[in-house]
Image 1: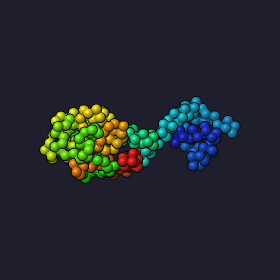
Image 2 (image 1 turned 180 degrees about the vertical axis):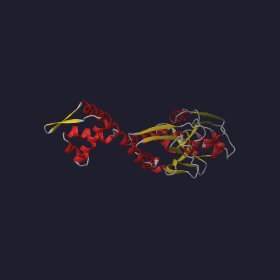
Image 3 (image 1 turned 90 degrees about the horizontal axis):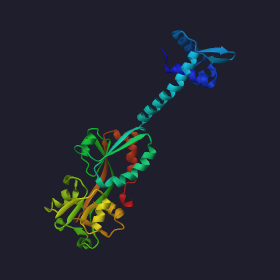
Image 4 (image 1 turned 180 degrees about the horizontal axis):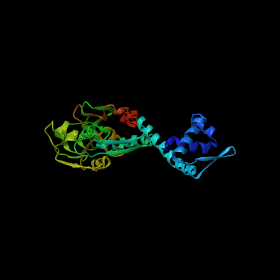
Length: 299
């Protein structure tokens, strides 16, 4: 039977020019190496090489096997490296789910250095799930979830990344701008602009308007933070955004941040993974990079 060791012998003899040198490279004795080749020749009724003075000359069968060795061995060695990368967590596919609509800007800051540091890891981003991101993570549809609303399940683990406050973005001439704090009733005559997500995922409803038994005069959505803030700056409504995004994207606009209630709405972004998978190299590598820039207040 032809096996990898036979091909390796042929390649090393061709590289080094002698059986003795090949045996030393392969950490076997010269008689043991010669014995392996003689057994192969006897099994198949061929000659691999012929002695020509002090050198060896490959037969046609030997040339054929050498060509095979030069094709196959690099592929096998590559396969071994790939398996070693998988075993060490250097290679794989990181499927990231994101439930935090405005976090895409933050995510892009992490993604660029991550892709550079982990070039053999495929990176996928998903923002739509059949049920919820938590279910997608628990059901192995994604490998890591970015969420402001972690759900405590025994098989999931969460790492806090950064804290922020949800604030009401208003035009600087809006009456609420001078007050600095808004109550639920203050929004009843307003047009509220939010991200296009369900009411259950909008904290301004679940933690502010619904407990206050109020609702805005009109509710509309916008796909991006930039568009929401431009609409607010044009006097087309008010919006609720993370404080750090308002500082960054609204710095050049005539906008003010207003607290939602006396205590405000405080949030934290978490990275969720399945139990023990934070030890997988490329997953742990993402978490490490994400937590190195933990505070968005300093971004």
